[in-house]
Length: 114
Image (cartoon, rainbow, N blue to C red; front, side, top):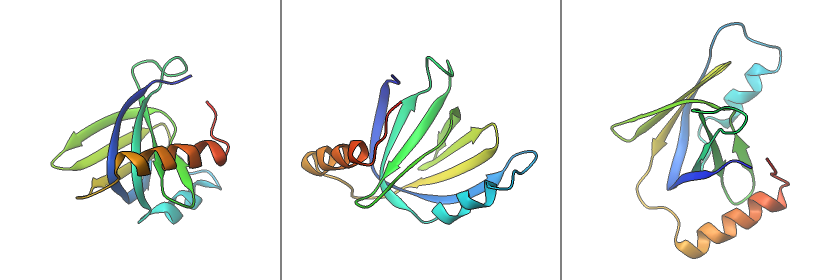
């Protein structure tokens, strides 16, 4: 199972761009632009050593990227995976500790398993 690296209480997806050849289902990723919630940065090991992936959880759903290279600059996270480049903005405010526990329960409710 992947290890948790850090949690950002409030962030949102600002952009998703294709990288390389675009598959038929790639366009579905664009529907997540604007999605906001708690952002969890996870270690990609053992499947992708040295890489990270992101899980973004709101009160109704969750979104998970594949593993890639994560950079952060001026409140912007950029994750470059094999097929996509995701951009996330870190927002002010966010979740209390209690709300974070609720969000993690939702993640497992929705069936997330490594």
